[in-house]
Each structure stands twice: as C-alpha cells, then as structure tokens.
Length: 182
Image (cartoon, rainbow, N blue to C red; front, side, top):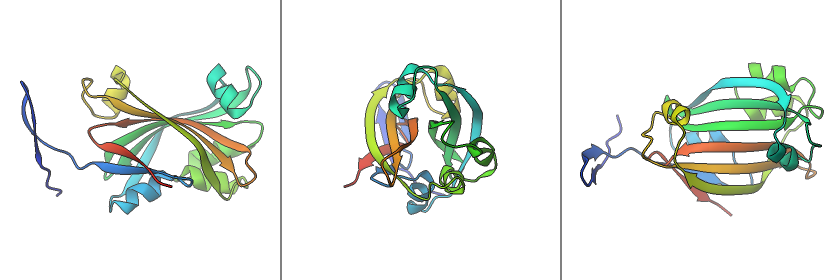
C-alpha cells in the first residue's frame, strides 16, 4: 500500500493526498512505458472502437479532406487499476487497413501499429489546456467534478514524418502531472 501525505482543503476537511504520476511527454511518449517507470502496472480498456467520419478538427490534424474516415479508439488508461487517462485516438482509416481489428486484439496501440508496418512513431506536437470535467469524464476517471482535468492534444508521426495519429487525452489533475522532457 502506498502512503500518502495529508492535504487540507479550506472548508472541506483533511484528505489523504494521492500519489501523483509524472506523465512524461517527449519525442517518444508511450503510456505503458510511462506507467511502468513509476513501478505501477499499466492496463486499460477500450470504451469505444469504430470507423467513423472525422470531425473538422480531427480531419485537419490528420490532413484528411472534410468528411474523411478515421478509426476512433476511446480508451481508459489505468495504473495499478486506478484511472489515470481517458484518451481518444484517431487514425486515418485509408492508410491503415486492418488496424481496426488489430486495435481490438492488441494489448497496446504501439503493438497494433507495428503490425501494420509503423514500427516506431514520435510525438510532433503536444498542446495542453486545463478545464473542468464533463460528468461522464469525472465518472470514468473516478474524480470530483470540482477538480480540473489536464487535456492534451497530440499529433504523432512515423519516421518519415507522415501523420499516424491525432489524440486527445484527459488526465485527472489530482493524480497526474505532465512533465515535458527534451
């Protein structure tokens, strides 16, 4: 069992502070590797996986025409069974035939991408904002609606610089802090 420190919130009381996961964002950001570096067990579950029409922001990020098709994976990421991320991952459907089935059966996104020929990819862009969670986000992340989420938009490219994935991830700020590594 991890021992936390006590945190005091004016007007609310005293609470055991949670261990905070340092989520490193670098050229090669991988969820499972980040969680393992903290001596925690990574896992996750797909909440939704389908081929769909890209919304305008996703189409633009992936370089697709309006109405382009994407493979969309909504995934809850866990560390030692505790939710630490809620991610929406979008891949250009035409570029990756067979990826949908592989995402259903692979333990990680990296393994599914490797099976379709993307042996490595890197983070080209990360944008971070903070906002309050929507009710469903707070429920899935097991967090209070009165605490903010850290939200990242990211763009991953293959070794040739071709876009592989556009993602939006939500992290519960009481449990995760984002660290940028160079």
